[in-house]
Image (cartoon, rainbow, N blue to C red; front, top):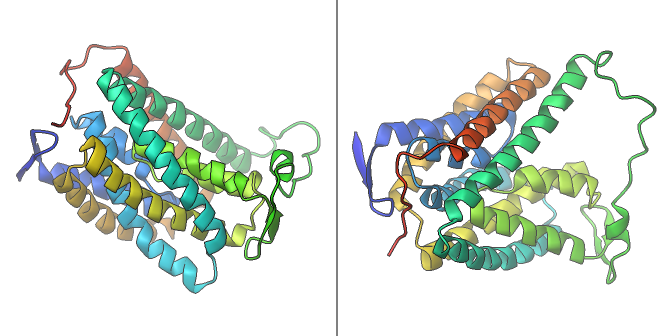
Length: 305
């Protein structure tokens, strides 16, 4: 089934794109991650230009976040006040990211920057996730020396910021500037890379902001939902790199794949799943690092008119 992608100016196998969406959907269901940080690299490997892949992948993340927000909301697992602050920061970040995206594209460096960011991102995530999985599976061999430091409620830098607010569902009394800055960073990354930002938002909410674990996932999904909507709109009106046909095929695949992924997760140990995911992420990072050092098949990039 050949499908023409108008923005990418390519004819691709539609079943292949659906299969890629299904693969990230399965990863989402099995490992509990959004899958957005893997969608863009897989699209790039299949021949989609990095600019179009990053812009279109954000739409898939939007669709995958809707059901999660509703599910967590029913269990009071969303801090809407905290989410509103991070969304406001994300909107600012999306606008800043759009300017940076256009600047890098005009300089002819956007493809390289997207690839380098993914190598750094996936390499870091894969390394940390792999170490955590190994420490859990073999605690005697990979035990850390000395006693673990006591967990802080929130980072000292957050405690030093002025203008404190009470975030009741998160059980916090901190400055809104911390989550606002976090939202800006996630908005920029979402604009440049087409990721949802949950891989950064969740640990930052836990270990920097000190939020209650009960509301972290739901609040992160709430932020991702609105930020990816904003990013998609900004891409559509400024960079014009969103391919609606590509995004639709990805959504079809991801929704279907997520159903299979959740069933697979019921029969596997979490430690084994994290180790497998770490290996997948590191393999993709190495593949992207390799592609940076070899001559591409197509030496020109796509610039939508």
